Length: 535
Image (tube, rainbow, N blue to C red):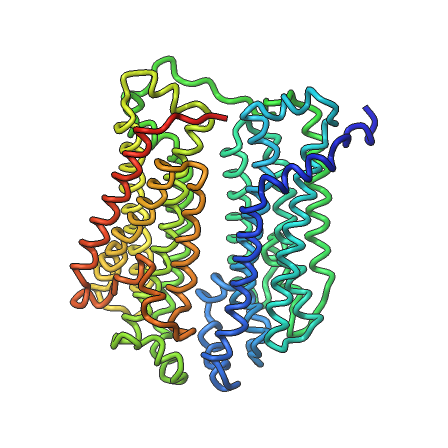
């Protein structure tokens, strides 16, 4: 087959993919763009003078802050642009990478796993058409991310060249990991495994960048091995240089070529790495839906636990710098002590909220596995046995609740351990851990809402991400934007004042727990009454 024939019907598949992702992609793109818009509009409010920005620069000039943010270019003259590049760009590049990974695996490996790819390939479609179409859609999506982030920065009267360098850098980072997903999609038979492998590469890239940036000012060779580092190594708003961004293009070219090379050496539907043979007899734990749910989600849970703990420990170690930063920046003090809290307690509470929001995201992905199991036919096969619909449904929700509690526990322990490495008191670990666990009812509301959508109208279940996005935006940034109280109160996470524990409200937690139960029961009722769907 000639190269031209191998791309037959690529354009048709591109249009088909854009049609299928007409909701998902705009949400990803707009969310990343809004993240940048928030940074540009809110940070000047908090750090309105050069002196206040330099106080922030001193806070960021520590190993823990460097590990979590970046190499710290421009700390000696901490302009708004340097602040955004140092503190925000990494956390916008990671969602761009995630968007690209999920996009590629959804339109390649997932299509083969469900059998749709074989059906499409039975028509006049080239072997590389599906992969090429997915990559072209990834280019379109990341171009949208690049444009929106650059335009958001321009609203802050920042340099046009540097703004577009940041936008292009974030977009190219996403494309670099699209190439990585193109390779992992060839290795395994399952889309979930392909996505997990690619996300593991993202995690490794984060660790390489963190270790490299801490080891040497401006980063050492380990930093340069990480695609997540290259947009910051372009030094926007400090000493702009475009050539590090070419590394992203290089990774994209190499990984795409490797993906094409590997794809012709396997059968459609198969992976290059053959699945391991299972045990002759299933483990006793797999005899129940709860055990199956735990086994299915064990790798994802381990990844979330490791990621949250690695993030929480260095974040907790920043608590020593909070008091000094608040003392030198009255505006920051107003925000941190808005609820009458001690600044350090307010810092711990903010970290608890942020980590709880991440656990809320896990809860959504965990419940949405019910939808995945149904579409692949696994639910129908399980229900053909003695397993009832309520048992199947509530077993998966039970695992989500237990896993969420475990992740909150690990997150709180991480922050407490990080704080204990400094000058925190001996009771800090227990206090921060309990304060973080207090967000469990809010997380369960998010899980319950997702379950209700799944049970009543499965096609709408992904809309649960709107609740998470709303909670993140208004929970983390509502105080800065000085919004009316009822706007933030719509978030289930707004009703927990984690620290100090003496001020922990009990009644709202009970109400949230009851609401989570009602939502879960509503979803169970809907699931029991509706037909089982499959692809």
